Image (cartoon, rainbow, N blue to C red):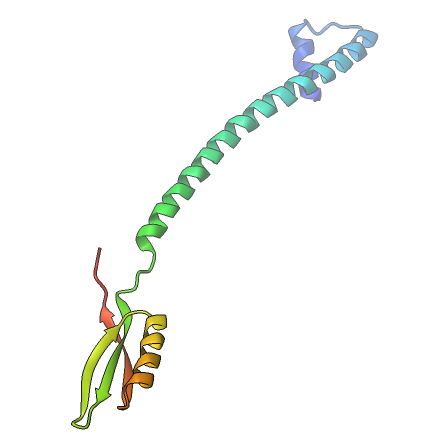
Length: 128
C-alpha cells in the first residue's frame, strides 16, 4: 500500500503538504480497492471459464474413455437340459435366461416322468 502511495507521490512531483497527503492516501485507498476488486473479478472470471472448460472437456473425454474401457463380458450364461430316457443322458434344449430356464425346468418336471439334469455353462458371446 505504501509503495503505491509513494509511486503516486513521485508521479505528482513529490512535494505535497502533510494534510494533502492524508487526503490523497484516503482517496487512493478507495480507488485502489475498487480497481483491485474489478481486476480481481475479471481475472477470476477468466480463470474460472478456462478451468471450467478444461474440466468439462476432461469429463467428456473420460466418459468416452469409460465407454471404450468399460468391461464387457466375453461369455454369456446358458443352461443345458439333459434328460435320461433310460439309455444315458441326452441333450434336450438350451436356455439363455434364468427365468426361462426355471419355467422350462418346472414344465419338464411336471410333464416328463424321466430324470432331468440342468447344467449351467458359459458360451462365448457374439462380438459387436
